[in-house]
Image (cartoon, rainbow, N blue to C red; front, side, top):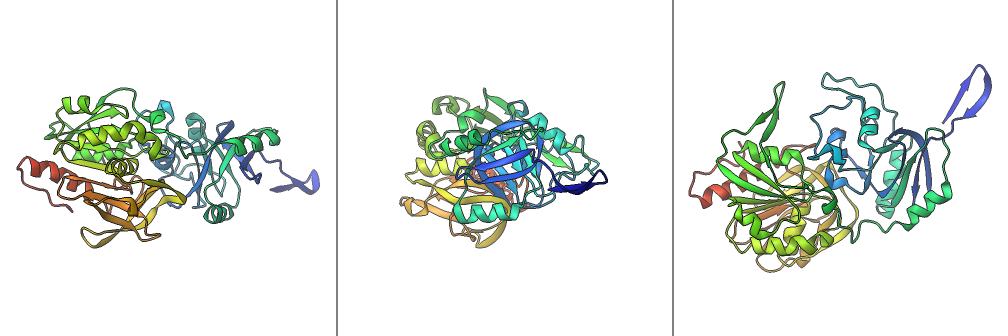
Amino acid sequence: MATMTAATPAWATEKPTALLVLADGTVIEGRGLGATGSAVAEVCFNTALTGYQEILTDPSYAGQIVTFTFPHIGNIGTNDEDIEDLNPAARAGAVGAVFKADVTNPSSYRATAGLDQWLKKRGIVALSGIDTRALTALIREKGMPNAVIAHAPDGVFDLDDLKRRAAAWSGLIGLDLAKEVTSGQSSVWRETPWVWNEGFGEQAEPSMHVVAIDYGVKRNILRLLAGLGAKVTVVPAKTGAEEIMAMQPDGIFLSNGPGDPEATGDYAVPVIQDLLKTDIPVFGICLGHQMLALALGGSTQKMHQGHHGANHPVKDHTTGKVEIVSMNHGFAVDADSLPEGVEETHVSLFDGSNCGIALTGRPVFSVQHHPEASPGPQDSHYLFRRFVNLIRERRGEELLAERA
């Protein structure tokens, strides 16, 4: 970064106002924006071209710094509709963001604020002006590093302290973050999907009741369930099976969320195992998928670079079709650990990792990817209809077409 003015005929170096300090001591300098201060987290990269506001507010990104591979982030600004965490005041989501180009003024009729202003309000520390391609290549080669992201407008940093903090952080393995982002109490969700130039609707006459266990649930998941006729009761992650069954659900949803699934599984797995003793349909997404696999006797493992983006090819073995889906996970179910009676239904065509399971002969299934597509393609929206059809079938009702 260098500038030259009439008063300074020679090239002058611009002082960096933000740093990304990796655990191995690597220091990356940039221009700061968003919140001031610092945050320690794991660095990942996301390949989506759109939906940066939805990405940064996804509770599954808790404990992470998101590097955007698309160079121009922020040019459509921000608004109050494109957020995914249930309680924005709690700031569940990414703690840091890394951009290639400087953020420009918003140029969308939906914008209510610029990205820099919004980042400040959310408490997200960000930097721009770095070679995100090089950082992405580093992550692909060496895995997702622990790091500290810091922003100081005066450019003054205690570099030794930042390096120490980055090296000392234990990382996401063994860390239960679902308890940090889950709902504080039960609530009923009624909002239905967004319609162009109309906004969100409201569920008025539900035809079924779904209890969603909130490990860090995204809003659009709940909207799609409500849009298919479900009254959705959202319950905290540590809600017991007896309390859930007392609500008389027609279906049970296991949500997405952050952190190490085995750590969350300490309290979540016994509850799911008790729920599986009933014949109530169960559907899980992301962390919910991993929780279900653990409850059925499988295991999970940390991934080298994770899957984060909206352009991932996944094959659905139940239909034989390939879908382009949205992904956001740094842990995966070990397909080889799945016991007899658990079928692998979906697989990543990038690396062959598991992306879906179903319990043979039972109305129980889950997927690793994000079929709610927020952001991302809508190829997998049919999975919500598949879940609703399990409920309708159990009640002897006419089934919906999976693909409307």
